[in-house]
Image (cartoon, rainbow, N blue to C red; front, side, top):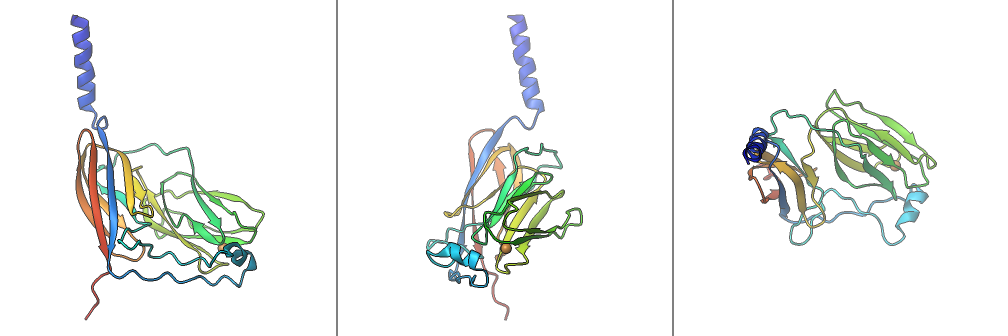
Length: 241
Ligand SMILES: [Cu+2]
């Protein structure tokens, strides 16, 4: 009995010593407030291989994808503050960025610094994958991917919100990569929803980034169990007088 009690006591001491034992999911939704612009069709006629993949109707630009109720897609939501420089393992699984019908898929992704990004070419045409990081610790690359070259693997070494990607062959192609030094980030889906999993209990600043709208922040408190909910509303900046 004595030994059992001692064991329990030690277990409790270990649990309380570590800040990383208790964790919860952060779930939320992002809405856009304002008139929803129409996404224009992309003219791909210059490259018949691209054009031929959109027989069902032209691809459209993706710079603001909101449903009628404002649900906003492609918002990168991440922990901006509260992790206090803690170090995290780099996932061995790569993040995938594909090129399909001469569009980057997905349009917005997140990755950890040092994690591999597999850039695929599902098109039988030439792409030129061109990254434009602004953080000097991140290496820019500019690489041709002919139709037969199906995969290149790249990574970024340091935090950056966001690294812009473009294609020098097809000027309409664009994507954004959020590079984090932790695993607590997510991109909103077509319903504006996101989930950040297993965030250790504590207080954090959460930030929501969108390619055309001013960023929003929220302070959240993650308890020792259960879920934390947070919603964002994003809108265009007021017009200057
Ligand atoms: Cu291209």
